[in-house]
Length: 80
Image (cartoon, rainbow, N blue to C red):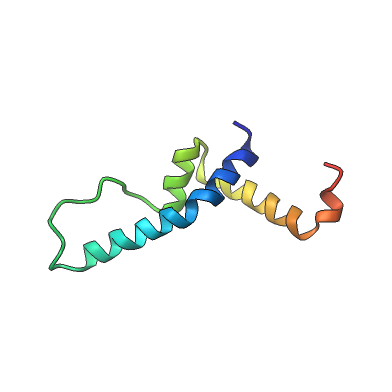
């Protein structure tokens, strides 16, 4: 899979994954509702997304940096 496709997938699922992360934090921090069972998904949101798309976290970060730079200076990257 091309790395830019991986980044596009990251952009699509990141809001959902961040929301799920906040829900897990609330459940773990609220002793009244915590059942003692740990959530099945562990790790930072960025690690979970990188694993989902099949690349490393730093590779996905580099792709994000490239895309952000291209979006800011669109005229320089139009020919690519």
